[in-house]
Image (cartoon, rainbow over all chains, first blue to last red; front, side, top):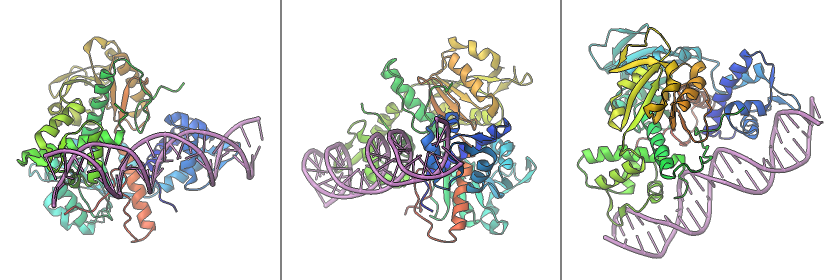
Length: 227
Length: 227
DNA sequence: TTTTGTGAACGTGTTCACAGCG
DNA sequence: CGCTGTGAACACGTTCACAAAA
């Protein structure tokens, strides 16, 4: 299978969510056009994305909602459960644990670590908080994914510990670049960057006074409300 | 000024953070190569990004850390303060309010809204929570940015209310596409997508058993630890 | 000699447009 | 006729490579 682009995978995740909704609405089939409208993209993009993985549609009819949903589910690897280790039991960590969609999509937080002695031993959403010092020795726990929800300064050290503990993927919430071995997949969620790019955009439009709103719709930029 | 790509702006935000660190370390100058190493990218990329905005370096010497930091600060529009309205006083909203870096970079949360009567009237990090029903009428408050930290189902409605209230930019944490008028800038932080792309990547590598870790370093993917 | 700034080459993702099938 | 699947055209971001400057 050819290399799949990052953007394609991200959109697949979006399609998956749309399909859940559409299925809840009781629709049986959906065309690439309707699916695209829901996401504010082109139908060609939808078809191209799906075509990398197979032919799931029926010409003249569109896609069977339930079937396509299952296919994407399998493609994304959501048809299994993932063992997640969370490091950092602060605000972000708590928010994450409290988020129900987490477990719903197959991600089980099986361990929580923190450095603060006051927190160690406490329970967070039913999971006991352990001393992060014991993390590097947790290789036997079979963690698949590690989540870094610590202050920036601890991020790289925690990443190293997670790698030692054997995780194959890391989701990093700390606003700083961290380095991991090539075989470990890294994903970042950096609110600071989003906020600053917003600031940049507003700053710009103020300069270009009132002018053309500009159809700069790359990635997650704005888009006029569809119908 | 030519159109600046999204990726360039995001990197600018990263450079800014690196420069803060480097400045704290007491260094006076930095070359594009060293700056690039810190972010795990190429020096040509750094120079190209900066070149869109001017010539800030000195050939043979590199960039003056303090000066370049100020330039980027101005480019990103961080040399002013932004009035932020937060909608949703749940876990994500609280985490956000508690994050100190927020105000430090010029973002002042001047109002918090929620729908839950039990929360309305309470204070969150010093800000009184108001009824979200009053949001559409808040046009006089001069909000620049709106943050959506509500459950998915309320997201679009809240977005509409924020637009009515006059925000020019929206940061959406709800895992669903929302539509806004073209003149409003939209930015999304979707943890679900990140998690699912992680799942996809791990799922893939398991299939391609042990094989070449693959240098798929697009976007925020993994990278071998530098030096 | 070092390092910037930048056109040009390159690679990759998106859009087009249409053949193919239902 | 409607809609998918896809090669080809296109657009755009990244990397190269080198002239210019310190």
